[in-house]
Image (cartoon, rainbow, N blue to C red; front, side, top):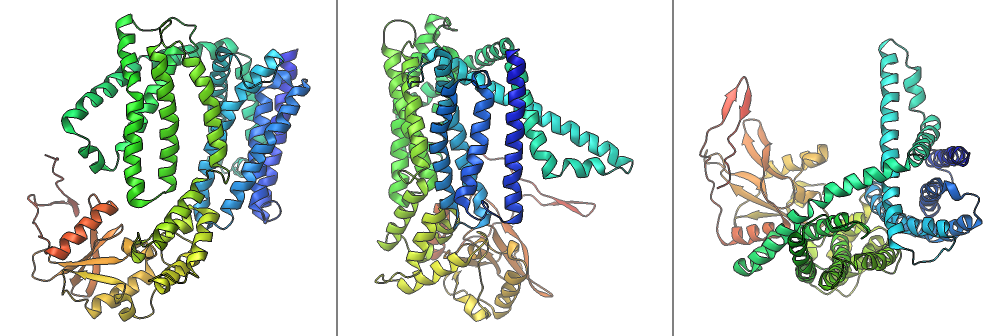
Length: 582
């Protein structure tokens, strides 16, 4: 009877959630409140996702007043963070909003997943407190992942069958079901109820969830020795190669962070809650323990690499997130390294480390979604300071980054730049900031010069002495106005100088023109009917490489090298030989 009552309650909660989401959708469609104020809209979406799902996973305790009090407490920070992110999003162009919302949604999902087991364990024991038995928290956290995952899979298959239903009837001219299933008034409530039904279905088969968890973790545990081998082998190879090759790639921090993530995840899959016997023989456990001791070293390397990038280019949202992840993995690494050196059961202190780190990570997730450590605020402040201090050339500063990636803080920084005084390049900074503020799409300028001669001022021709032909400028002007999507990348970012190269690429004695900065790098050639776009330059084109190219081109002209292999033409289609790297 309890399970039946819980299933009915879950269905009711799911229906209410679906109606709330439909109401928010209608608000956006008709531009009524709360859609007219992003602070309320994002806050309501956050609560409409978090609160009903929490009730569904705690359905056995719906009669417990402590659950409702805890939900009231939980709603305050989640709603407040939603309102704050809505404020940050308000000045951002609509095109950039999905990326910002996705990051926020992932943060809220992670925070919710960390906090929910503490609430569930407290309801079970009758004491809501921040320190619960680790074994119970481990069980509940994995149960929540599997229940939500299986329910999402069920809902996806449910909609696949509805699509099949509609498609079959559409074959015989009955379009009623296709129209019905695509109506928001149908889709939101039905999807929520289907998901809620799946939650109650999966929860009623608890033994299957436990068996699935053990099977999944058992498989993942046997990837740990491989990760330990990779981690240890790479560390042993570093003294022979030195650190210099790491910093040349631009990917060292990214790859080393992922290696640490895999080691932490697979180690927890092997250890589980510490009550299971170790899955490895004694010698292999020692190998893994040695690899664990290397975690702080990797965190130190990541911090050093990241520090070099920040020193060169300042703070960005990506670098701040990398710093947060480096800090978290560094703390995990230190805690796990201590656990690996302790006597007693293998990695016996892992539970205490994980319990403490759960609250550290939760605190960081709150901090980065509030003004305290918001990456957008820190990045905007850093980039603005670099420009005003003369550490960045005015024309090379990424004004579009402020406009499209940093929300309200980027908007504030641009408005400050639009009225800046006292800087050596104040006039140019103000002009570029105003252009960036006027843009509604990241890739494409808000306006173009009216005359080809004015366009020429934005182009630097190389090698020195190369001239811009009036016919090419006129063609480029028309192309930029008629088909912005095919323009060189240097015309699609505010402030990026457009460096173009005059070089004979086909050996006919006449120079083609190729853009070097930005992406795409477009190639133009003369034809009987005038200039036209003939293709693009492809290859590795990181910003730092482009700077080296331009420096090299200013010293000496490039060399156009004919391909070794001819192209193959078959029935009007062209095939080219892409040589294997040597």
